[in-house]
Length: 500
Ligand SMILES: Cc1ncc(COP(=O)(O)O)c(C=O)c1O
Image 1 (tube, helix red, strand yellow):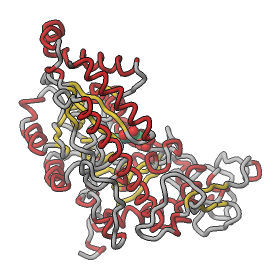
Image 2 (tube, helix red, strand yellow; image 1 turned 180 degrees about the vertical axis):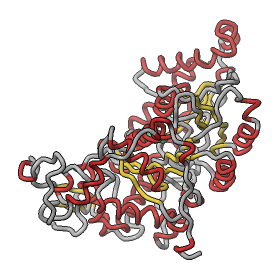
Image 3 (cartoon, protein in one colour; image 1 turned 90 degrees about the vertical axis):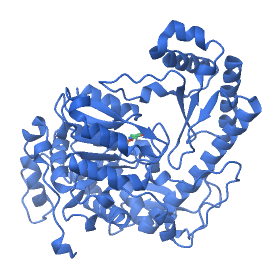
Image 4 (tube, protein in one colour; image 1 turned 45 degrees about the vertical axis):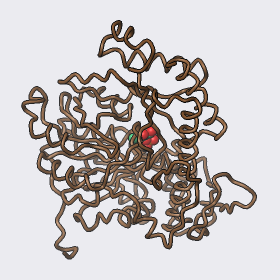
């Protein structure tokens, strides 16, 4: 198919919220193009004068990722031998820098064009969106949290329904509930969403959930799921997508851990650096995005720099159909307005000095470092379980292939006082009782693991009671090996004391 034959994305006007439909686009936004024309007498917008901007220069120091060769990945910590590069936005005069006068001014609320160009090339190289439909685009925001919020505002009225995985990032659940939106959980296993459960629930919706409106949206965390640590198998994505098409549902693909994909974990295997023959070999090992199969423009992919550059950068973007993004942009105009120009200038300055290849080098570095962290964590976890002889009482979720989380399940039905506690707290309360008890005991011993119940998505119509296990989530991202070792020792000591 030639580019000319490529279809536009579908219109999803029938799915927009009342709020979205009653919001027009900002009239002032349409005038911004004149501001960029130096011959124009621009008296129309309340913009402060350039000479009164307080900052005249921005400098940063970063790893010199452009200079690294394939398979030569810098150490995790900065040392004397680390090659660093300095960026000086006012002096280096890089062609593709965002000018300070633009970065600190109103305008470009969709994102600075220099940054958008870089990111579009990056996304298209990875996911080939240009081959799927003709009017795809990018909208810069300040991260996935706001990305979700904006999509909820654009699509959902109070009382609408959204599908979630049966465990979900707790802030997502909170955002949905706060807007009075219903959520229905879809079962997951170690490979992500179970397609049959999705199919069953959609096919029998009226019977199972007839009191709820049909779902408009589905939200998934495909790689390095938070909290479960699992990765949605590529082979399931086509089937899921077909179901979404059949039932006219928009997919929100929240994928902040995409570039934290790792090779399979093999117990006791010492961490050896992977060797790639070329960058394509590395890239071909990575999961597919739903964008790569989306011909309708019904997938909105949330990208975020939080896990790659640091959460305080507060920069992200949504990839999807321009028609939908235009509506989200209208919402930005009255809420976010635009994401920080300083952040965009700095991130763009760094990306342009690295180049597309350097950006991929950076991801290879993340992969190496996270693999080492994950392997150290899981090796230590399994060794501690053996050493304390508690393997009957604890089950570890299949090793994560992406992200920063690991999940454990305590087999509470083997606890010495289980029968007594079951009589006291009942089938529905027993898991919470044990979860709270272990959480408190860990906290008193100065160990924090997140409670599994924070991430549970309740089914509004069907009681799902788990009475034989309770869940806890850990992370290996920002933990030193010493703290990981001593933290897991505390955990195993308490489990042993309690269970034996
Ligand atoms: C699945 C998921 N989505 C979104 C976020 C937050 O992302 P951001 O910092 O881009 O708002 C997190 C952070 O932990 C997350 O795990």
